[in-house]
Length: 552
Image 1 (tube, one colour):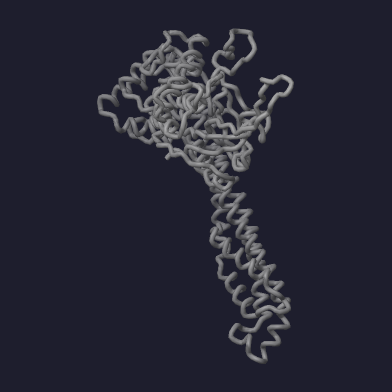
Image 2: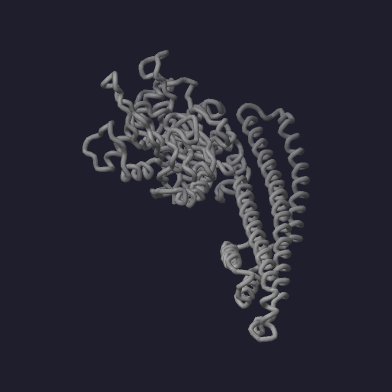
């Protein structure tokens, strides 16, 4: 890998070489530039060692395939006759989780083999081109007398006559060194990114506590990967270790008594969302009767934003729903429908976006919205009908909308006004910090350079499950029809808040509080072309990110 400093130094040398003249040049300066270029380290890396490691991963892939085959046979085979009911289901799900862990390990070895093999190929090319460049630079030096002799009478004519040829070789050689350094650096960055993503899939190790046995850790990590992300697994471990012995025993009893690994995952997720053992016990009293009904758990405990099972790409944008219904403010079958989770006609995008982001991380609060039950119940009766759930959801939006304005210093809640910076920070702290463990810092994005600088932090947070609120802006046209014969058009800047809820490769998944998620590319984020989240085209709607709330 070549350092940015080496690339920058070579580019500066190349710029100075390009400015020299082969006719009226300075042989001594040319000599110095060539010597400086040759002192820049060549692309580093042991090709043989990396190639051997890649082959080791390839062999491990084949070995793991055999293990997975054995596990698959166990999963497909009938359990002992003595195993019946919930115990049999839990055992089967545990075996499936172990098999999935095996498949993840196999994919990790395969990723390691392919990533290292690709990097080795690029490193070979970089080192070969670097060698060609250094050969040309040495040839250029050979055309010039030694530096201390350049101005001696008997050598000055030689230096001048060979100057054009030497300069040409030096320019060509330095270009090869620059290209080799850039190739090496780019290949190394790609390899690091790929290996980090592969390492992130090793989920069970993220439950880093001695208070959970290895099989439970594997089952929690792999039973349903969309329930627990990296942050929830790690944070739950920290919370469990910090519990008193009595609370820990109570929580572990709930885990062991869960009707399914998925029920246990939701208990762990509640722990990660900063609920006490007493609150989690109260929560489990509501969900335990449905503990082996995975469809019920999914419907009532997860709005399913940032679902890792979705495929990146605009064609895979999704609309969030509950019971497959939409919202018709004027009544069923009327015009003017909104998506179920939409903020509707209120300007509460800040509150609505952060609320749904928090519900995706907090199954206790989500249960309170979908049933009106549990320690975080939202008022509205014990009813999980779509109408009742929607009413609670909108009430929660408006409650947080009012809290945001109050944090801004407003004396009276006004639905015609938005939420300012203090209110945004207060809602981030109230809704997102408990389940992420992070404080959020508002960062302006004034131009493409600022967006590019912020992108790695946005990706890093989203990849481990931490929502990242973003503000967007765009030009909208309004029409005044007060004078029918002469309608007036006015263009103004509109602002909106959404949340980055997922990341994969070079794409980001964005939740829009109009009730849908959309994938955009990193380059579109940098270029201010994420309009597909609010319109039908990258450049339409509100395409430009103008601020981001970075979790720290």
